[in-house]
Length: 482
Ligand SMILES: [Ca+2]
Ligand SMILES: [Ca+2]
Ligand SMILES: [Ca+2]
Image (cartoon, rainbow, N blue to C red; front, side, top):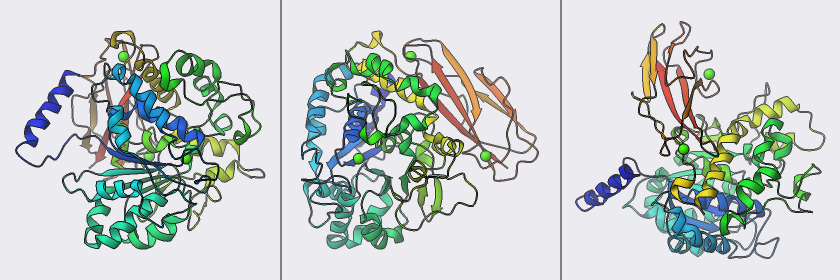
């Protein structure tokens, strides 16, 4: 905590004498959401992580499912969550002084384009906020635009920039990163790609989010259901956890419709289909922002065309569809539909980049729910994982790479469990390495003889504490074969 405050002060001092480029700045995020019940659940979790980012905007938008007057949660659906956040803010800052105030967030929570599916006819307060953030040349750090609904309000903002500031399009494009939860309207295909495609904007379009959406019980392996079932949710989230968590919409009697005919109980986790969009931008040490195919709490993606990243489909000879990646085309969603010929093993594999983090993800949520009501010394905080060497290394085949977690500590003084493992799906070396002392703070491995120059080997240092609930953080080390 002290180190962080010091860094902050230093930044303030420096900003007086020059334009700041924050070497270690937080990700800047803008959410556009269609206010569905699972967006409400995602927003509750999002607010618990608002200390991790510069939240530039929370914009209500439409989608193919929701628009003003059609299954509409109301223009101000986010307000009760922000009100509740305001009540817990004094407690949250005991755990991290970086939590923004409710007033700060409210000033950035605006209505975007909501009149119909794909509405991008006129500029709106929400689209204008996106325009202003993107055009602001006093801050050139990337902005993560997360579409939890349709892409229409983002499209409207870009159209305004194209019409009024065509000379700024390239600047704006360089600053944007997209993370879409499906393409929930046609505006990405009809407007964004034809007009902005030439700039090759990094675009993740997720389908694997479905692992933690309505059908989670059919996707997440059974041994992990304990982190989503009513017993766990009641104890860690829903009961006795303050005004924000009491608004969290888990299943209630009769709410199972969208989830299919599974065996749900009131209190069971319901859906947070939009959360992967922001989970991707949490600094867990997995370095997921460095490339969409590295993987992290927001899933792992594959470059399918240009700078467009979709979910890796593992069935042989699969061809990705042209056009929209959405509820009627994306592999995972289609695999869950009646009559699909896919096997359970294929589906489990496909959704693994998302569900593999379930325990860490849910325990982290639970700890933050505790933060909303308790003092620092009464609750758990995650370990801070460090290594005593660079996080990017290089080595030749036959060389031994020494890995050392020296410097790792837990802010609560908890005991730590270490685990070094190779993220084989994420690295380009096709074989497996043998990690010595993989459960010790120091580990090592020898670069295999068959590794080729240019191959990468990704080793994840995973550190779990023994607090309640147990929390996990990481440090990914990337070894390039020379
Ligand atoms: Ca949504
Ligand atoms: Ca701890
Ligand atoms: Ca590999």
